[in-house]
Image (cartoon, rainbow, N blue to C red; front, side, top):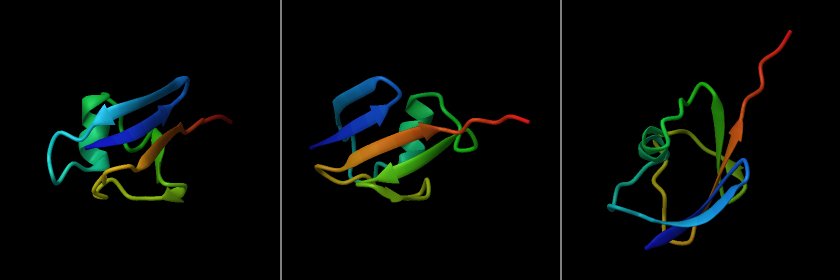
Length: 67
C-alpha cells in the first residue's frame, strides 16, 4: 500500500508501513514537528492523528514565522 508525499521539492511514493500509520508517525519519521508544518490529506487540512490510507496524497506545508 502506498501514498504520495509532497514536501518542499519532495514528491515521492512511499509505502504505508502498517494499518494505523498516522500523520504523526510520518512527521516523526521525517523528524518534523506538528508546530512547524501544516498537514493536508487529499487537499483537506487534517490533524496529526489522521490515518493515512492507500492512494492518499499527503502534503506538508512549512509554516513561516516572522515579524
